[in-house]
Amino acid sequence: MRYAKNSVVVQAERDIPLLRQVRNSKFVSHIQLFELMRFGGWESSRDSFNWRVRRLLKARFLSVCDGSFGAGTVVYRISREGVALLEYHGQFTTVMHSKTEHLPHISHVFHSLELNRIQLALAAQNLLADWQSEIEIASFNTISGTPYQKDYDAIVDVWIGDRKARFALEYENSLKSYRQYDRIKDALQMERQIACILYLTSGMEVLLHLVQELREVPRMLAFADAASFRRTLLETKVLTSGNLHGTELRELLP
Image (cartoon, rainbow, N blue to C red):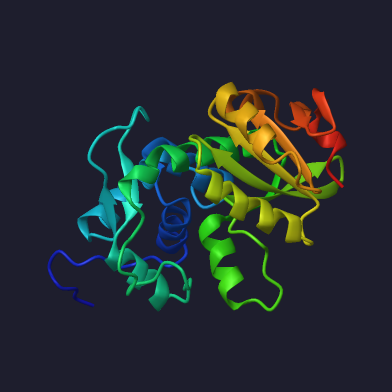
């Protein structure tokens, strides 16, 4: 069989999971992408991974973001051609598709990179059972008859011994307006599908502000800074409106 010069033959069993991961992450560094693919069981060889990425970049299914963003390596995002390829292979989302007017904006890079770090920290300790990204959650919310009340940054299933526990994850690296927090409070008060919502922040100033803003929400909200969570994970001492001295997260998970 002869192929057109410079064409790329798509390997559905490896290329499509990689592109899907980049789409769902919005932005991901080269190192993070390899680790995510390794933990997912899609890659084991760094050389094979590097070759795969080079092919997908050459075919313009992936693109490199200008700047390193402190990640130590280049940062990728999916291209419109990559989204179209995913759709051809049955990987469609209602919120990011080939006709979407705008793909994720570069201003979201740091937010995405931190979420990737959190996901990898859980995976490295064999605690991660499942991770649903914001892209997947938002897509589900547009078509489900029983949607979540918010497009969370992630819905996370973790192992506690031999059982699974679930929580919604929100990462805040900056503060929002009062009106935005009012809308968030309304959504959280209506949530019935998630028993615990974990807010991780970029620092203590944001954390304390969130505790104050959301103190009246009658849901199980837990607060911690992201760096501490990546170190101690389910043993992280989190703040709640009822206990500002701190409780281990695992004790709050149903």
